[in-house]
Length: 348
Image (cartoon, rainbow, N blue to C red; front, side, top):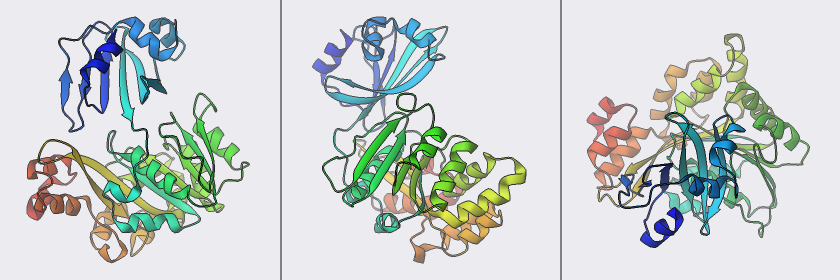
């Protein structure tokens, strides 16, 4: 069986890649891809063991429109799983390994200013970055910190990844989209009747969810959410573009009034090739940021962040340049992670 082989080999990996009829592959914790050519080929039964005991994977996928996400536990290891059809209805699986324990927020490599964001009782904190940038881990670490306080915390996730502690001061409810609730927006509306102090929304994907999140922040709740954007300015632009043009001014005004901070992350391979290093960009509403968002001057935000060091703001390039100087990442790796590589050349 595939799972016996993977267990016996003792691979250290962050993601497993499985396609029925092919050997398994994995991504190691430094970000490198490996194909296990000597392993048994992945079978439909291997996939069926994940999705439902005794269920043929192809039959099961017909009821999920050809792809779905969920959490699974295999050999006492928890995974975030995506199953889909590809290449003419071949079944493929990507499984991201989730740590059993939530790392302490202080150990992630984020600055003290990020910790201070959690001291506020209302507003929006956004953790952004591409897939695999550590957003879920940062979010879980923030929520675990909040669990130490006598708060009511409701999370809406797709799927639930980290299980928050239940032996702390907070009362916690974690809801999974497609399992506990049909979608994010329905769950957010319901959460407003569940006495929350803190609301975590796994991802803002559409206008309805975005509007519900803004309304939750406006009515005195601390809202934490994520987005798949590479920079703080792009995060604002993407939020705006979820709505028709005639609503841009209203939405930007709401966001300017409610947001506490945007933390954009990227994980960069370490100089020794053994791990990944967190690089980040931070934007707060201080200085000219809130005013420029309200006026729709998104092109000014990068300059505002660059000039906002006294408020705890920092551009991604400055973080990358510092990591290069410290010898923690290479210049080439930094250039690959930057969204402004030509500017970074002058800073490294």
